[in-house]
Length: 443
Image (tube, rainbow, N blue to C red; front, side, top):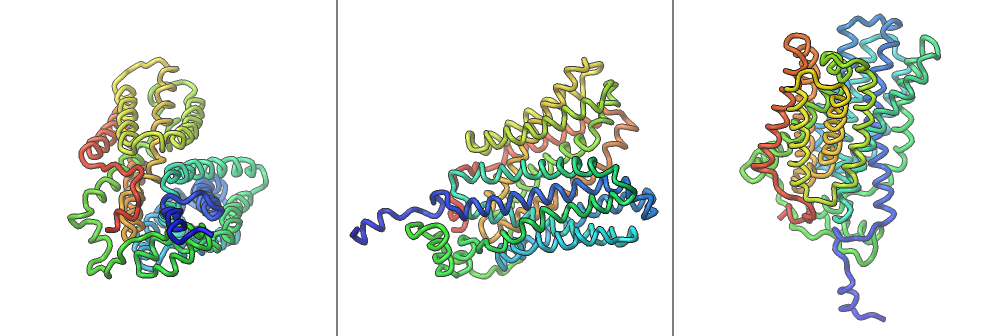
C-alpha cells in the first residue's frame, strides 16, 4: 500500500487534470449551446422575409424584430455577468437553454408583430446569458494545456449554427405560406436537445473555493475528476464593497477591461459590417458576380475559424492577437486604396480578410475569459460583449449608408482605421495569458 507521502506526491493540480468524461460532457453542453445561439440568430432573417405578409409587417417592424435578438443579447450579456459572479455559474447554465427552447416553440403560435418582437427580445436575452456563462464555465473547468482548443471550438460551433440556420431556412422556403413558422420552430430543437445534459453539470470548483465553499469544491473534484486531483486552492474573497462593474474599472483591472472591450469591439465592427453586406460592397467596387464573391467570403470565414482552432495553442495569445489585427488591417488598407483592382485579386483579398478575422474570433472565446479573475470573469465577459454589440449594431447600420453616400472605399477605409486602433491598444496594453493558472488571478 502506498504511503501517505507517496499518495501526496501523485496528486495533480486542478489546472493540470487529465481529460475526464466531465470535461467532454461540458464541452458538448457548451458547444451545443453556442451552436443554438448561432442558429437562433441566423434563422430570423430568412423567416422574416416570409412572415412579413402574414403578419402585415412594414419596414419598421421588420427592422425592430430583426434587431430584437441583438438588443436582448446586449441586455442579457451585460446584466447576467454580475449575477453569475455572485450566485454561481450553474443556475444560469442549467436552465437558460430550456427556457430559450420553450420560447422558441411559442414563436410558432404568434399572430402579430408585437408578439414576435416580445419573444425575440426574450430569446435574445437568454442567448446573451449563454454567451457569458458558457465561456466562463468552460474556462474554469478546462485543463490549462487544452483550454485554448476547447474554447476555440465554440467559434466554429457559432459559425456552424448560423450557417445551418440559413440552410434549413432555404430548404423550408417552398413549404407554403406558413413555412416561416416551421423555420422559427426548428430553433427550439438544439436548445431542448442539449438542456438535459446541461442540468447534470456541477458548479465551477474555482468559483466555489473563491466563495468560501472548499469542501463542496473538493467533493466535485474528487467525484468527477478523480481522487488524486487537487481542488483549486485560493483565498476566499471578502464580500466586495463595490459593484462588479466598478471593480472592473478600478485601478487594478481597468487596463484589462479596456483591452477586453477594445479588442472585441474592434474585431466585430468590420466582421459584421463587411460580412453582412459583402455582396453589396463588392458590387459597389464594380465586381461582377458579387454574390459568387460573397460565397468565397463566407467559405473563408469557416476556414478561418478552423485555422484559428489549430493555431490558438501553438503561439502566444498576444502574438496571435497582434498578428491577426495587423494582417486584417493590411488587407483593408489595400482594398480601400487600390482603385480598379483585378477581380480575382479583390475576391482573394476579401477572402483573406475573412479568414484572418474569423481565426481571430477564436480569441473572443479563449483570451477574453483569461483576462479576469474568478469573481469578475462573467462580469468582464458580459461588459465586453455588450460593448461589442453596440459597435456591431452601429457599424452594420452605418456601412450601407456610408457606401451609398461616399463610396465603398471610404467604408473599407473606416474598417482599416478601426482595426488599426485595436492593434495599437493591444500593442500598448494587452497582457500575455497563455498558460496562466486561473487561480493566480484571484490572489
